[in-house]
Image (tube, rainbow, N blue to C red):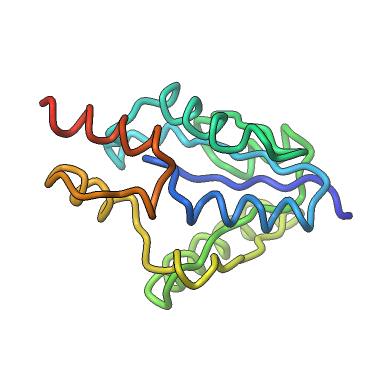
Amino acid sequence: MCQAAIYPGTFDPVTYGHIDLIKRAQEIFSEVTVAVAHNPYKKPLFNVKERMAMLEKATAQLQGVKVCDFDGLVVDFARKNKAKVLIRGLRMISDFEYEFQMALTNRKLAPDIETIFLMPQESYSYLSATLLKEAASLGADLSSFVPGFVEKALKAKLLNR
């Protein structure tokens, strides 16, 4: 097994696609830190503590996975945690341009940290948290996209506004 890796993201909310990538990363790295970004520019539905709690519950059975939060540059967080690898997920070709730009920017900021792209299982490749939030707000059954406790939290937030 290789060293530690960071899987950063907003995770608003965690989906089966995220969990699939965490499991894939866990097969490659001895330790995977799922790093929840504060990122107020994305205007998340769930606050950082809520997102972390959902991720902790979703990954509780996985060895070598921990959940943390961070504010600021992910490369600074990686250095602080002695990780040399960032994990990024690619669902569709439409993700590639943004992820490629971010990876190259991170490489320029921190040449000692590498970005590795992982693809989720095909059945999760179209999932996006934005789409799931919209579907949840309309009362859709999300059981094949997110764990039950995430669906319940989503609907509680969106349907009780």
